Length: 352
Image (tube, rainbow, N blue to C red; front, side):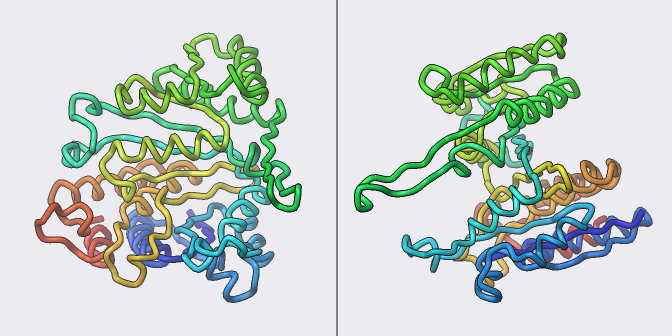
């Protein structure tokens, strides 16, 4: 099979971790007889520096024509620390999601047996955790009308959702629940927010189409609490953009490191695969960043974008082996010998 993949390295550690995912992907392609065509493109602060725009039209065309997009990270301190900046790297991310129709962010959270003691939570609370969030990605407060009034003394951000936006995300959630343990949790704040009441009534109306799925409805603050008390009580959770942004970062620490969790953003035209961590500018260029989340995102890409499950399992198997044998970067070494980002990528590719 020929795989046409857009490669968006982005900022900070993005290029370093993306390089390792490319190494491992190429090794898998060689092993299983596939041909990968990689097309690099600019985004984020790197794109602003080059062309003044965080998601250039040329980058969009490359992504739109690709079978899948593999993405690193965006963000740079010179924009983070300047509240008056008119153009920001994150604007490129929002623009990309909107223009590519990336409406469903899939964020799995699971534990690794060899790293269970690295989690800040007790072993007995997290063993067996295997849950997935579906976060709506192109609506809500991030995309609503925003601005200032009264000479800049009052700011506002409007949260807006349509029933259609809720329905298409919930449909993905029901379908995923059917393929797993047939449990679905709708996360909202329906006791306060009108948009949440729309979410709840829309999902309730869809229950009849999926009679095998047991659906629960929980307020976002209760879910935030239960995620650290009994995370393995959840399976598939669906929620709006802002709630999902916060809860998925909370859930990511269950595994012991944000550097381990992959994600996918499913779209109308193509799908994008990326690690959940940020650009970590403090580590950029030092060859110390953990590449495993990006490599596991490539595994998701093989399976979800191309239907190549065996190839995806080959990647997951060598990642698990690297964790078990301690061939990891310094964030996971716990005082033992650690390896460079590039060394971990080389090791994984060689074992495939």
